[in-house]
Length: 412
Image (tube, rainbow, N blue to C red; front, side, top):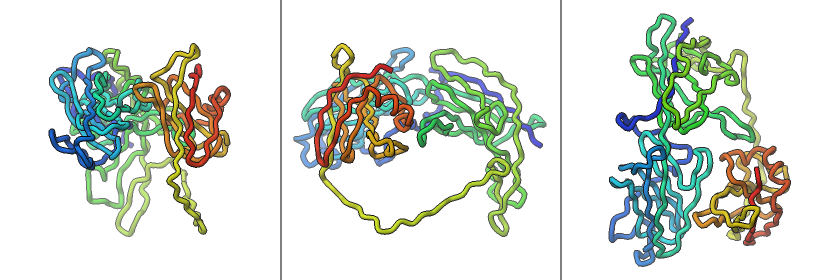
């Protein structure tokens, strides 16, 4: 049995040696075609350039040094009609979007070797904040402080000390999914090169787990009956995700070794037949199985409506001082409607003026709670909703109703 060896080192991106462009952030903009603004010409979808006279300006800086980041990519999307534009920063880290309609926009800044951030994000796992701009308004100082991305690097060799080429290595993090914290892939994967070396870069500060997989079909397109493979293995050498060792990536600390030299307890997986002349490696636990249940529903009725609800308002602290940076959680009073991707639950950030707004909630009874910070996805956690409901503001929505709320931030 092959016993690959995993050595992991934490490092920071160096200004003198920039890594290739970072993998897309989980908070990246939707992958729709982008358009570059042309001076003097209307943006796509605009009916009249005379009505598109607003602008947004800002800078992209390095959080560690405060120095401007040149050639950073900045993307803007939103507004009515929908706009999706991108630009790059100049030598002083400045960017400008002109000829904009009034409306609500989202802006994301990206730079190789740094963590991609949406405007208003304090932490990578938090949602960003929208930017509200009035017609003809000239908005300035929409600035970004991008933290440097961390690096996890290491080597994979077999029991003979030979490098394993083509192994797929993924950074993993716990996130709230389906109402609980689950270990899920984060950013992009890396493959070991001909030396068995891998490098995961552009990682946001936080706690990571490293998982690697390998089989001979990764390097050979000609499938055979007897293919070698290993079950997904977590650092420092376990197939059980619960026993995986956490790795702390902190951009504020210098690079340091992280206990290299652990051996994998990699387990060869028995091949399973998928056809008369093809087979594939099974990566699951021995004896594990899963079933897919199919249900057929009939007689469904879909009712369309243009009477959308609208919930907006502001929040203050316990001293009645207005807040501009907080997170709003709206969720139904009926606990039967709590759950993953429930259309009755919203996580809302205010704009730069501290005003929040969300549209399209179904009619019903709701709680609204303003908190200082919350991890994206945790709004699906029933225990958190139960805790927030104790001091939340209760309100009701009828079809097409607009509601204005004045909230007081909860102390967490």
